[in-house]
Length: 150
Image (cartoon, rainbow, N blue to C red; front, side, top):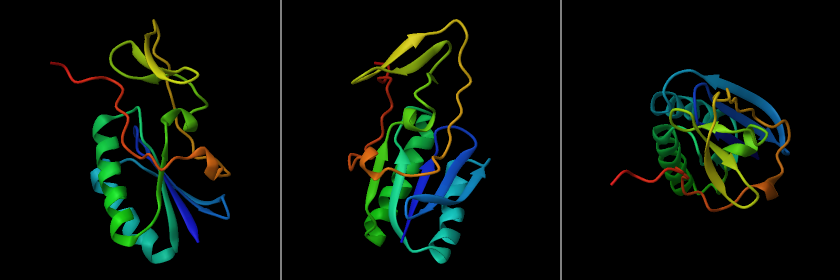
């Protein structure tokens, strides 16, 4: 049984396959999520017995989060595969994440807030070498972090 982790918050899109919670395969994709995720999963579903889907539900690229959520949620329902999520800070060692302009998302103890930075940090996301399943939640709804302009 294998778990698949998807980090589709910025380019490159990162996907990891885990066996016994250890990373055994990883891939970086530089195409848009909507183009690369279906093609990659076509291969992954043939090669691995996927028992769990996990993704970073934000903050990050709104479109990439939406696309990855819809794709993975649909796959979860159709294939009856459990679907889990956590926030993006799990994959970048809790560093600030660029939002708009000089505005960045920052993880506080129990919330995610925005702060202005003079110099916007260059955040990168990494797949963990080992999964700790208790770090993930069944609450998979996307987190966008910035309200719509009204």
